[in-house]
Length: 113
Image (cartoon, rainbow, N blue to C red; front, side, top):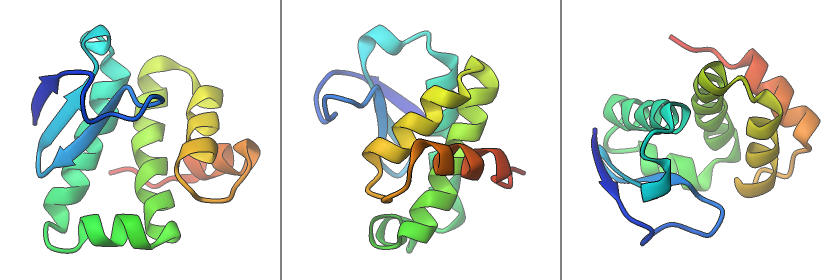
């Protein structure tokens, strides 16, 4: 994973984002945020498993996006201990139409390898 520290290419609410293949943009003030790096590394792994279809499926399928993001947030929450914050972000910013309570349930039930 190549991490570029910049405030560009990120929405106001984002601390980081996988922008292409294994390239992640992270805000400079989150350089030491282990949970964020674990979250973005998981998205890179997801892309590696399905390099030709992952991005398209992620943006077109709510079910696929929820599954992928829930796994990434589960791994992030394991580092930060903040499952409520992870659930809030998942419910608020991923265009899934779910509540924070539903998001928390999905994160807790997410299958990680």
